[in-house]
Amino acid sequence: LVNWSLNLAHNRLGVSGTKILAQAIGSIKSGPGIFSIDLSWNRLGGVGSIYIATALQTNGTVVSLNLRHNNIDETSSKSMTEALKVNHVLKSINLSQNKLGDQGAIALSDAIRCINCAQREVLGNETLESRSEMAENNLNLAKIHSGCISMKDVTESEVLLQCSPGEIPLEHAKISVCGAQASECLSLVSLNLSGNQIGKCGIQALAKALKLNHSIQDLNISRNLFEGEGAAQMAEAIQDTRALVILNMEWCLSEGMGVANIATALETNETIQKLYLGGNGIQDKGAHFLANMLKTNRTLNHLNLKCNRIGDIGANYFSEVFASNSTFKNLTLWGE
Image (cartoon, rainbow, N blue to C red; front, side, top):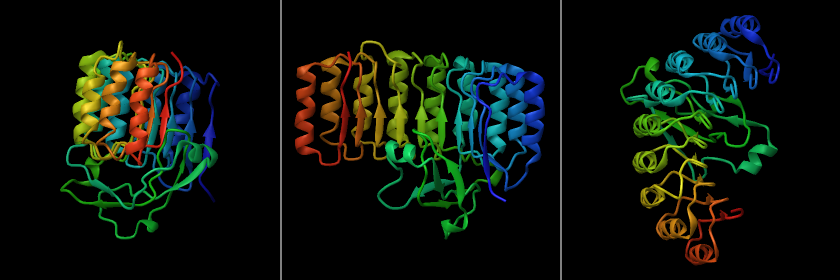
């Protein structure tokens, strides 16, 4: 018997179909079983998503869940929050293109906060594979322990994780107890909240939660217009984060508002390796802030600034960076 994936995307399951599926998911307490579920574009709505969230409270095998574009609103997001508080197996959840709004983001922040959660110390120089490698190798071995017990030999806890671009497989992780009971630990590694109508209030709650979270390494909050004030809050989270490796903030700002704050925070950040800031109106002025940041930052190696109206002047700022920063490898500037 082996773990297997279930793809029911674009099937219009409806409430009754989702209820039956959720009952089956909830009945699988331990493996082998379903480790990856794709329910994107199924119009689950509030009721359907609550069924799925309830199932997650008892399921013990699902590692990756895709709920993209299902009309999940702030009301049903509260059920998802409760599920995340008790589920210690789920590593990746995609909630993009739903309708969580500020209140939904605030509700999810309760789970993300994970106060006194177990601290993960990444061993070795590399904590993630490149997106091209992850896309090429659809199945990666993630050696992740889901509890709060210290682990001497991570090879004893091997979990298959289906990795699509943006998800992070941890190669080696040492987990130490920091005073939390197992029920207080959040195991989520990848969270996608792109396109959820989240404004500055929701981002503020998420940012505060990230300061205390030691689990999430891949965060996508793109296409949520939270402007400069929200960017300032995220800058504080960037300064304090101990885990975040990939951050996507594309199409979140207008006219580059808040980019200076982000750049300043990144000067001392030692975890973020890939940053996506496309479509934020950064222009040459914002490019100057980011280029100056790269003179001191030796962790960031991938910066995507597509569709930011950066001209020759801005490009020249970065040409100086490549001459002095051997860690920085990939810069994207295409598009207006």
